[in-house]
Length: 313
Image (cartoon, rainbow, N blue to C red; front, side):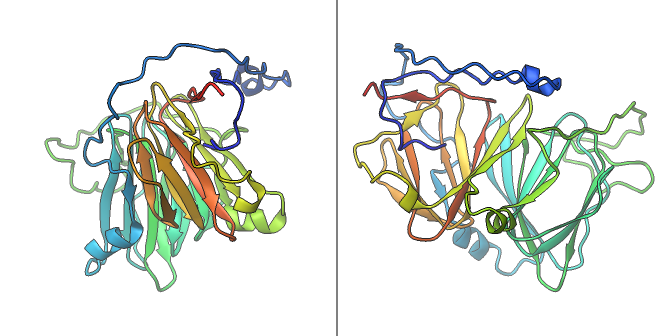
């Protein structure tokens, strides 16, 4: 979330009212009201529960799997959301599947994939692509070309995966057995807050004022694309704490370029493309683009329209 441009008094950003827009009305959402409040904050810096870490470098993750043709590594699993890196060898393809009650989305970090989503034309996704798959919607992901693909995949914690009976399922998750059942399935729909595919590099090439925008929003999670240049930001203020969220953690995938992070209780650091950064709830954090090249971070939160609490200045 952009945190370095605020200099007003502390205020609470109420969740944006979107119900009217969802049902097709053009009514504008109400403006946030700057409000001075008392917020309970832990007296000690919130700790990290494994597997969460402040900063996971992609180079380190890849080094751990240098000899693996197909691999996956869990990066975030905080009880609300999960995020993992998934690498697949060239010409590999997933079984046809769907998630009964959750949305899956992923970012393509390396390689090319062909994604077939029920009701949508096939998608060729490459570096810089984001793909959004609604609940109860069949899909497959195939690595195309002669190089492996690497995807950063996000879903709700403990999300289930179901497979149609048209083919034998893979091995059942530990402690479970496959049960043949029937369901009344309704494939999910896209709306102004969710689209099937976007590529940030293509979007930026077509619009020199591109700044990103919301790509995922439902009742369980939200993801914002934040794209830009450091030269367009105010000068760095090392004393700026940024903001914190009283209820929700936040994590980011650095999708291109470099991003500077300053967290409560830690020295500032600069994360590079493919790195994953995580901050617990109730932890001050300030983020900004870094360096002369365009940069992009994907801001991922557990609460939709989560509250930002800022310094009273």
